[in-house]
Amino acid sequence: MQLLNMFDLIRGFSEVVDLVNTTLANHHQRVALITDQVCGRLHMDRLTCSRVVMAAMLHDVGVIPLQETSDSLFFEQDMSRHSLAGWTLLRSCYLLRLEAKIIRYHHISWRAIDTVPDEDREAACFGHLVGLADMIDMHLHSGGDAAATLKSALKKARQTGQTYSQESLAAALELCDSPGFFDNLTEKASRLQLPPQPEFMLGPEDATIFCLLFSHVIDARSPFTATHTSGVAHLVRRLHELAGLPERDRKVIFIAGLLHDIGKVGVPLDLLEKPGKLEPEEFKAVSRHAFLSQQVLSAIPGFEQVSPWGAWHHEKLNGQGYPNGLTAEDIPLESRLTAVADVLTALTEDRPYRPGMSGSGALAVLDRMVAGQAIDGEVVNLVHQHFEDLDETRRQAQNLASHYYRTLKRDILIATDTYQRSGFCPT
Ligand SMILES: [Fe+2]
Ligand SMILES: [Fe+2]
Ligand SMILES: [Fe+2]
Image (cartoon, rainbow, N blue to C red; front, side):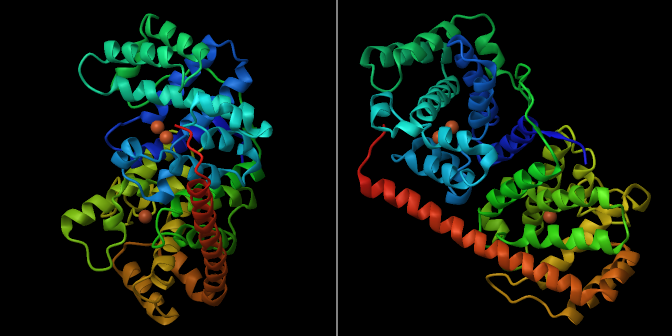
């Protein structure tokens, strides 16, 4: 497996966080771009600047487990809830320790900086810059003469001197007068051009840990999806092994399994959690997740295999699948493995509204799908031969994921509740 740049991965995942917030498309990318420019004006070194920009790309990630809508995100009274939830999600990953702390403090007021513990002070200062970039983006999309509104807001903030540092406000005002600043940020391009960044190359182990973390972040959105991804990832890795495919691809197929449903972040929760049959329009909306997964994964450099192996899990050999309606000759074996792992996991896992299907029932469904030329018969033969082994693999993985999900939810509650009881008010 080739080395992956953490910056590219974070950029891809930031697009996923943007799927939650449909009213301000590309919000995270724009805040990252503004943060980069503010840091540049403050003469921050490139390496540190990149770490702050990576935090900016994920700054509102806490909305995913809180299930908050875009409206509550931007107009909620207590802005610290999603900051603390984001910190809780990322802090366990040693690769993101600084970014997690920056996210924790991205709504801190400058006047509260002195109250932050010494070991967090630097991250809090960086967080305050992300908060400033966030505020700039909000003003740029507030309608009317955005440039004038923003400048007057910055000048007002300068007079009160409470929320942002004088130095950062001066940098922001300079930016407003720099050529092309507003054009860059208001253009409709789906991907904004960030200046070249230092590389943070990850080996296979770290890349897997990183993708595992993000699969947990995405799954934390709902108890209905909390363990599905983990089941599919472990199942497809075992199928890959049983099929005798090259060991060198084992981590790639695992990552493809972890990220196959990443686009579900863009599907309304009430549809994902609907226990009964979906209406045709609802089915169309849910199906869009495969397209979104493909869109996000295919844009990440180094994911040339992960993208088709993961995002094509709803393609069918008879051409009636989605998102591309591919036919058998275009669907690689690895994508077929993910498709079978996905169906098998969906059938046998327990859902909050129904228990999982028995082995014989699930195998009968798979056989019918083979007869209808939806999934690969050879892969389903493998499932018949090794059902006990595969089912145990899935069950263990899902039990572990369920434990992780409950722990994460508890930690988020503790973090946000502690804040509320402490009476500490950063805004
Ligand atoms: Fe925020
Ligand atoms: Fe934000
Ligand atoms: Fe899916």
